[in-house]
Image (tube, rainbow, N blue to C red; front, side, top):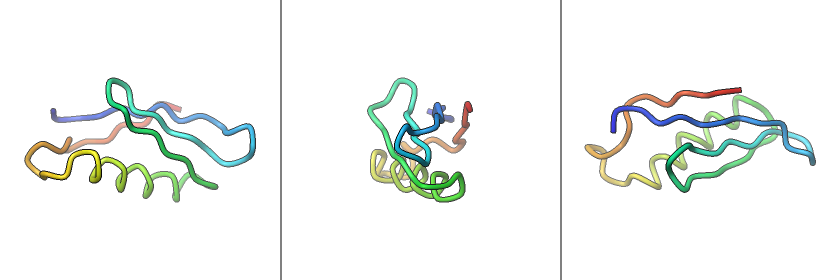
Length: 61
């Protein structure tokens, strides 16, 4: 896998959520910059072996 796509939405309780298309990855944060960090961390946790990890993370807002 060379890239992974996340759908970013406003959270009803404030902040933002992001969910990956085609993978079971979901995260949330209070602001966009924190959300980007949380997404990177979630991707690293979901793909612990670097050679299997997507090289590109795309966001659809």
